[in-house]
Image 1: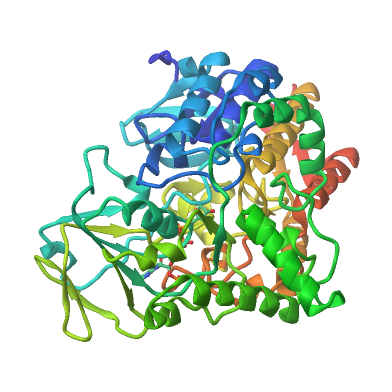
Image 2: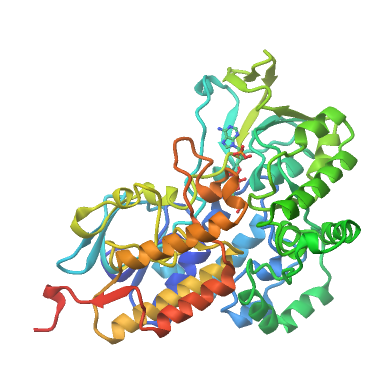
Length: 541
Ligand code: NA7
C-alpha cells in the first residue's frame, strides 16, 4: 500500500497497464526516483483489467506479447496456448508487480482529473477525484491508446430493461450463458466476442455496420517443446522483433504481391491462412498489402473467397463480404465466419437495415423487427489515442490546455512529448509506432528513462520538445500514412470512428525498427528537438 501522507514525488505515472508498470519500475528501481502510479481501476492491468468479456485475449502470439526486460521471468513464465487469454495476461502483469515490488507505489481506485504545470517551479500539480492533490517534477501519461470508450447514443437506449454493457467495462457478475444477446460492433473485440458468445448463448444477434476481413488465428494448445524452444531463443526473438516493422515475431515479407504469378500468390495466401494470425496475413504474405492497391485487392479477394466457401447461407455470406480495402488493424479469430453457420446466430447489416430505436425489450430495426434481448453488448470501440487525454484537464505553459494544443488533432514529437508541456512524457502518445504494443512500450519507456537520467545528471529541471520538432514529426507521420492504404479507410487508427472527430494521423507507419533507429539518432545528437533547461527559480544561485 502506498504511503498516504506523501504528496510530493519525483515522478507521477498515470495508468497501471503494460506501459505504466514498466515506467514505475524503471524510474524507481533503476533511477532511484520517488514515484507514485495512479489508476482509476480497482486493479492493475489497464486494458487487461477492463476487458473481461467472453473471448477476450491478445491476438499476438503469447511468447512475444510480454516484456523482454525481465529475463528470468521469460524463462519461468509458463503458457499452454498460442495466444494468452485475458485472465492469463492479467496474472502475468500481477506477477511482474510482485516480482519488482511495485504495489507499494501504486494507488488504485484513483482517477486523475487535472494536471497543471507550474513553470516557475518546473512542477506538475495533479488532482484526483478523491480530492487529493499531488505534485511531481515529471509526469508520465501511460493512459492507453484505447481506454476512452465509445458508447453510441441510440434513441430509447435508457428504456431497455435488459443489461447494456461495453466490452471495455465488462462486469464480473454478468453471465451470458443461455441468454438472448445482441452485439453492436465487429472489430477485433466484437469478432472475438462473437466467436465465444455464439457457443454459449441461446441466441446471438450481431448488428454489423462494416463487414470485416478476418483470418484464422491458429489458436490452440502449444507443446512443452515449443515453450522450451521459445525460452532458449529469446535473445534472437527480441532482436528479430526490434529489427522488424510490427514486432509480432514472424519475418515480414519483402516480396511484392504482383511480382509473383496468381497461382503462387494464392499459395502464399493459403500458407499464411493456415499458419494463422492477422498481422502475419497482412505483413508476412507480401511486402505491399498495406501500400499497393492491386496487392491489397488480391488479399481482399482471397479472404472473400474464403467467406464464400465457409458461410453456408448465401445471403449471410453476402452481408459478411467486405467491399472496402483491407486496411484496418488486421483481425484474426479461431472461427469467425464459421460462427454464422450456427442456428443460434443472426446477422443484421445495419448499413442496409439501420437500428431505429431501443425499446424495453430490445432493438428495433428499420424493417420494423423487434430483436428481443436480455443483454446488449457494445463492442463499439474507443475514442483512440487522444480520447484518453481529453478526459483529463491537462494544462501546460501559460495554462494552455492539451485540448487547445490539439485542436486540429493530436500531435507529438516521437510519440512521447508535446510542445508547451514540459516534463510530460507520454507512452504511446499520438504518432507512436504502429506495432505489437509491448515492444513499442518498452522502447519508449527505456528511452524516456534515459532522457530523464540525462536531465537528472546535468541538473536540468525542465525537458521540453520544440514546436518545430513536433511539426516535423507530424509531417513525417502524415507522409508515411498517406503512402498507406490505411489512410483511405475510416477506422480508429485515424480517429475516424468517432462522430465529429477529424480524421488525423495518429501512428508512425514506418515500423518499429525505423522508429527505434530514429530514437537512437535523436539521443545520440544530444536529444535533438528537446530543450533541457532550468526555470529561473530553479537555477543555482
Ligand atoms: P474497433 O476496431 O473500433 O471496432 C468497433 C466496431 O464497432 C466496428 O465494427 C464499428 O463499425 C462498430 N461501431 C462503432 N460505432 C458504431 C455505431 N455507432 N453503430 C454501429 N456500429 C458501430 O474497436 P475494437 O474494440 O473492436 O478494437 C479496438 C482495438 O483494441 C483493436 O484494434 C485492438 O488493437 C485492440 P465500423 O467498422 O466503424 O463501421
